[in-house]
Length: 166
Image 1 (cartoon, one colour):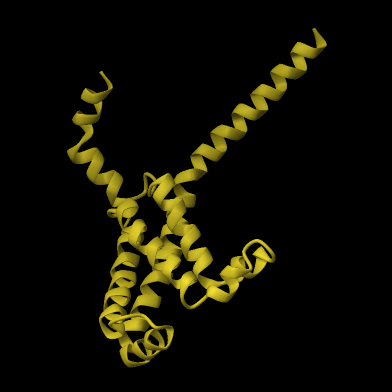
Image 2 (tube, rainbow, N blue to C red; image 1 turned 120 degrees about the horizontal axis):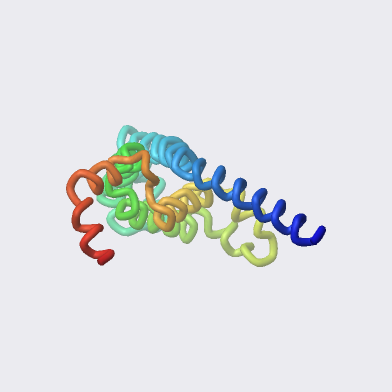
């Protein structure tokens, strides 16, 4: 009898914890989107405002058509950052943003990447790692309820969801 009582208390405590954490999911995703969306925006803006320097850096890395890629990546980060901030097409824009971070690791941060299995902290300390991590979070968890994606979904696709559940 005593053991059932303890199990019941633990289960109630666990259920309460899950309920609280579920409630915090959407604000957490909003904070991730706002912070990292702004960081992407600033990084892209910096690339676009300093196009010659960015082109020179891309040239040094051996990236083909460096000016074209500087414009493309700067624009992607700038406008992709805004999409993350707004929570609009969040999962979709996370894919090319994540791809740019993988390319950043393969080019500008390749020395750290070579140490992934020997000294992983070197990889985790590099700037693209947290950008990539934020993209993967949004890609896998979605933007949360506090986003334009969810507003559009609720306004235009609410009936469609009900029909597919039947």
